[in-house]
Length: 107
Image (tube, rainbow, N blue to C red; front, side, top):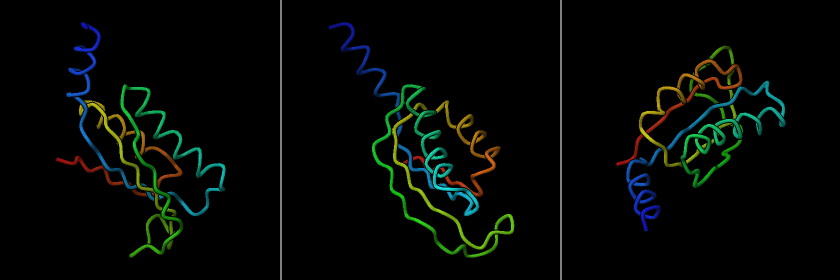
């Protein structure tokens, strides 16, 4: 009973997020899947839960980003502790495969 109560408290601390990532079109299929998997590993490695990953495919960008006119879009929905946001965004910022990202906390 104590472990069940501790698990419920832990789940209450998790917040819902949506993350849209634009991956460089220069990345091969293996690198594309590896970039998605690295985000999933980050979330699950810190006690979070990935609920959905949608691959939207290659789309034209509204304006050039890092000299690219298109990118591969991925939407990931997950639950994670709020204190892990900064580290996730920092990892996405330094990734050479990710040309843009947007992390949104759902209410």
